[in-house]
Length: 92
Image 1 (cartoon, rainbow, N blue to C red):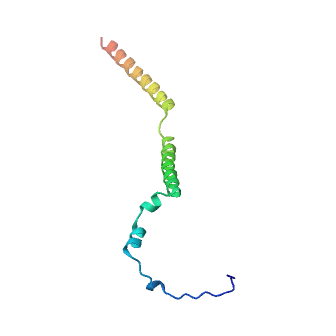
Image 2 (cartoon, rainbow, N blue to C red):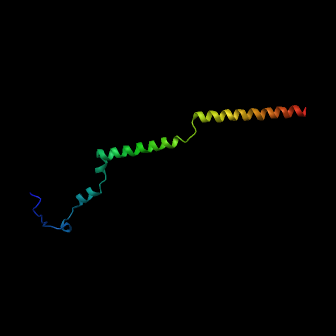
Image 3 (cartoon, rainbow, N blue to C red):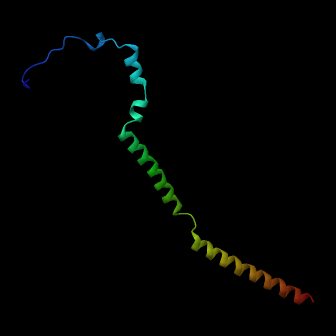
């Protein structure tokens, strides 16, 4: 049929009656859950969540920073211990 020809509709959309089974098909969500595109989008959504966790994890202290903190704590503890010993010797 050429594009130049005009189409005329004989029925109106309001006149079309849907039976219960076709109305249930519209409400049925399992139809799109079985599609590969939906599964790909769900997988991509999960991967984006893991990527976000990874990006947030970059701001947590890593092992290297933790080792520096432990080293500083040891130094502070040593200084406190030395001050306590010198205090005991000054009393005695």
